[in-house]
Length: 187
Image (cartoon, rainbow, N blue to C red):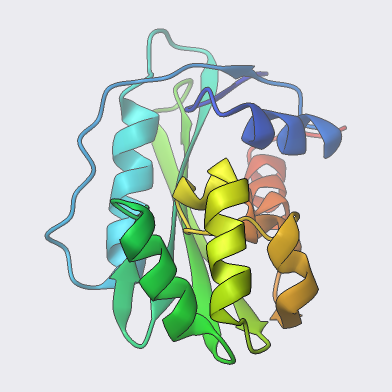
């Protein structure tokens, strides 16, 4: 079973590999859909588009993922600039945000699509303006799809995580494995 992850993001590939899922990476060209208001539908449809964009031959299992934050019913995509990143972190301070990942697995052997999603709730403690400014200045990762990286400086300000940790990093391993196992993958 040849598995292809539809991204070239090294951290996502490493997470999947560490979870025991061998794969290669391939980046496709897909313009993400921004006009879909329902977060789950948007994440899944973007994951489908990303997966379909890398299909090159039959006999492959393609994994497409799309991750963003939902906060107060607003979808937070990757911040456009430092100012937007700061504003979002200030808003999420002492509050809960929801990391949503759409998942699409395409079995090109059967032309079947399997879709799902994962939601992880992340509650921050109070984050001061000084900390937010230092984070933006020192962490180039603030431009991540969620607008923050929890395994760095902000890890000190997380009060609670409900759901799968790796989903916050854009790779909900549990859901991915469940889909792969349903189509015959085993370690």
